[in-house]
Amino acid sequence: PAPDAPSGPVAQSSVAPEQAIELLSKIGLFAALQPTYLRRIATLGLEEDYAADALIFKEGAVGDKVYLIISGAVRISRTVPGMGEEALAVLRAGNHFGEMALIDDFPRSADARAHEACRLFVIRKEDLEDLLFVDRDLAYDLLWSFVRTLSGRLRETNDKMTFMAVTSKF
Image (tube, rainbow, N blue to C red; front, side):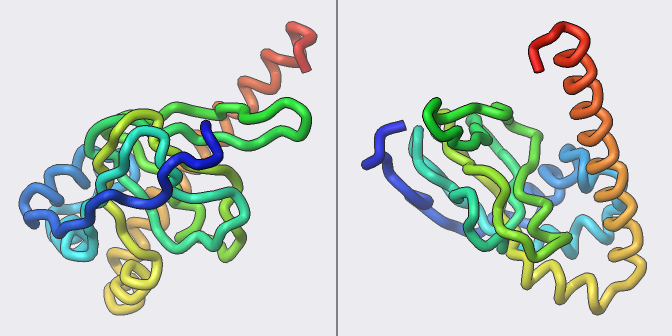
């Protein structure tokens, strides 16, 4: 990406509650939650539009939001010294990213950039924490969803590491 690539959303707006509930129900992290919980979470989000190649967040930045992809694609990458950008994943509609920020207070572990123009449903960490503090049952169900998601990602990483070791590409 060019160093002068656009950064930040080109537009931000609220999302109709029913549209947000439908979106949340199709995203793995939230799909197992009951409709009442989805409705509560849906009221927290905003829609952000990003132009192609726009920076959504930078590695090392404070993680304060989780992102759900409504349309378009987002590239998750890291900069490798002497090599440049190394894409870790290209995520499309129905995927989410940035959820680690909801669990810990560590800085972002990678860059997120609009791989192509995209619309994102964004939930601020602070707003979700407030909701989870008030609704412990929702917090419990969402925690288990996070655990399953992160466990699945760890399993995928282990499989990739094994493949790389076996094929001597490590």
